[in-house]
Figure 1 (cartoon, rainbow, N blue to C red):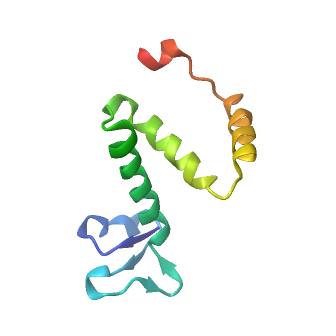
Figure 2: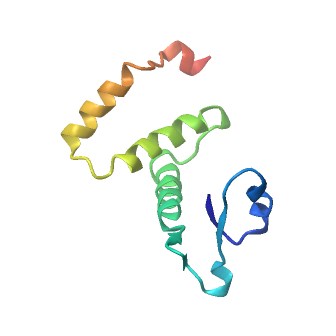
Length: 102
């Protein structure tokens, strides 16, 4: 795991390999580790929730995160391949309307 220097991450090393990049010291890359990718993802997620959906309920938050992680992880796909991949993935776990609103 790679994170910035926030104190909340101080115990992560007990469970994961952890690299800390102290942004408060003006450091943004350390031994080829950086937080640019995850910061870019969070930026897109926040912009999507605030700009597209305006708000989300805690009940469905994971689904919104899943949607945006799919978009981010397939950002280099052209639209046809992204659509085909989404169809392929849909066969593995269909969410019905009844499950969504329950």
